[in-house]
Length: 189
Image (cartoon, rainbow, N blue to C red):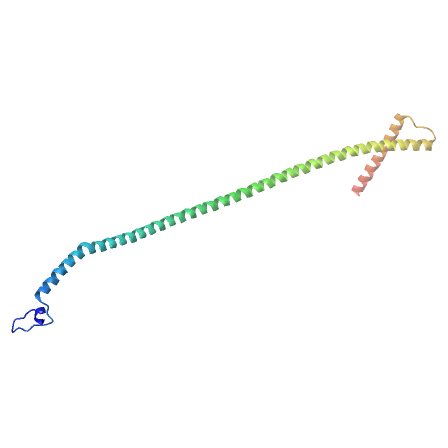
């Protein structure tokens, strides 16, 4: 049985058990060529496509990242420019507010000064009117008292109004003259 499985060797030849038969070598070679052709036709293109897809995805991602980075940088520059502009505008608004505040304060001071001047003028006018009225009232009362007193001292009635007025005015004029003389002496000495 053994003879059936093993090929017959020529009688005198030594058979090397490590060397395969020629038919097996040809069969293995054909199988290897077919396997290489199938591998080159079906497997390699898929690997190449997967590699190309992965390369494209990576490059696309890198390009998107670069583009996003450029957009972020542009947005940052735009934000910084807007921030600088907003700061300048805020400074201008503060300066305008300061100027308006100073102007309002100046206007309020002017109004307060004008109002104070008006009040002082009105008070002086009122004081002058009250002084005039008081002087007239005092002259009348002093005149009446003086004539009554003079009438009691003299013993005769001084009811004549014209005479009474002249007497009172002369008396008051003498008082004013003596007061003026006393003030002139007080300021000289």
